[in-house]
Length: 113
Image (cartoon, rainbow, N blue to C red; front, side):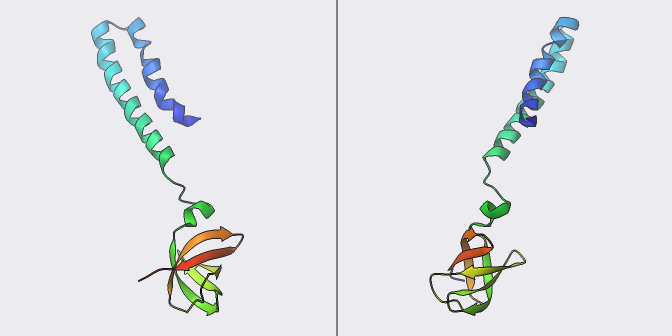
């Protein structure tokens, strides 16, 4: 709901024209409208960014295999240890990228160094 707040600055600023002389009201209103426009554009920019937390933020994150037994193992991603499965056998020290999270298990794919 707070994303609508920048829109209220210019609308509330229109009340200045009812109480102040035109040149004074204009001098106060223009910076207020500029500030509202700038803040509104920053809000829109922030809303269009992809998720950076939770399971959505983990997709594509890179890590390193710590332990492995065939296609299963443990990987270190962003300082955390995750159980992992891969379509190919894993080897400790291999770099991997997370494709998807299913519960507490990361589906990973090998990446080149």
